[in-house]
Image (tube, rainbow over all chains, first blue to last red; front, side):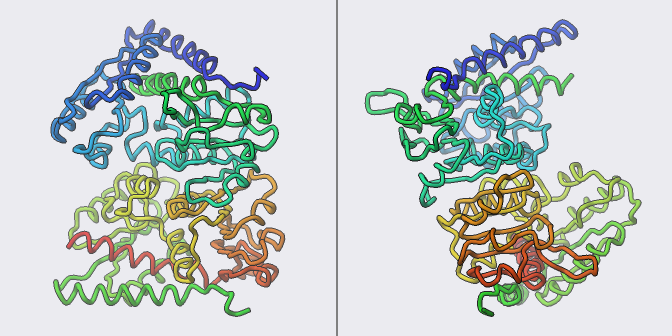
Length: 284
Length: 284
């Protein structure tokens, strides 16, 4: 049973090892290291914990990480000013803007300001359009890329497979559906308005849930032997973390399943680091 | 049987009528009319015939249409120069670049130059990203929008329906899949690498083909009563036009089917005119 569990850690470890080695090589040749700048507004717990994880991963990889902290009441002008400074700063390789931004800041304006060449989490419409058209020289959002890395690591080929994605958010569901379509999967995008959801899901070879509803995906959603990728991070009343999938119920019949925690979430910061490296290589 | 045939003409006529009336109203109030500039390189028969159809539709709608003709050997600099003039010309409301461009012209560069505010056929990545994220203030490609208009006109609600799209091109399949997902359909995107294609298609409530393979979609692809939208334009050896769907074979069991010619293709120029009107209203 244990070998069915598609853990994120070995995926992250392998990626990290590769990044370390490439960055050391470049440092040996050029004396340069990449720098990631993270822009945080206020002190949301989510942002702080991701910032800690990203900083640690960067450190491990040989990437310098700096944080630009803005007051939660910061104005559009202040935010844009900070972002433009980072765009223009040649010592900054990559920029990550923590989102969602507080209400006073207009994401639809700001996303057009971040330099697409430094935009390692696909905030800019330029990178989004590249993802959509399958151009490989842009940056994709880290979480869906983590799903793709997990599938690759465990040798799960998506070509010609029926993949069902539950969820159509701009951070996971939609980009992931297009990324898997570009990789020759036959993708069905489901969401809250889908009818006969469990029946549609039960026809899939690979089922991916990113809706943010705790233990929503039950036994009847999963065909015997299907791969289940759980992108959800949810908490019960006691603060216990759980995924979108009812893991205990689904484990036995699945052909492989990512746990929560320890699955997709464990890979995200390594993807971030790999995209910082990509941006870095483009500047050399 | 006749009432199963989802013809494009009544859809186009209704749209055209609405556009005429809005443009006349605006002309009455402001003395202004919109202008569409079409940029054509060389003399491809496809481009010329679409240009004629678009010019006629514009004339009917009260839109001025001008054509910028460039030599088929024109350089990047010449093309970009022409495009930038149109961007900057306040008498030009909207720009349509005939595509595909000849080999010497780099679409990936040019698409970033066209002004997103004038880009009525969704060439710019800015409009593509807006389509992807469901923002309604951009421009979508005309052909998939034509499909949506036909469904609306004939009262075919897509919400919660299982829609299968065969084809993943950037001009039809991918944008259409996202547009229908945004409208709450459950969309499956199939393509040349999909397995059990006819079986997947036969489960759909609405089947849309845009692969460009003559009479590819046969009886066994179509569930009894399903709506069939045929976006394909193909020619047999004798030069006869036919769709992707084997119309004669599928007609009886379908719940409604678009003919080729006279279906989706008949709506495209009206969509173009409606997007010119949208761009025009944004300038008032």
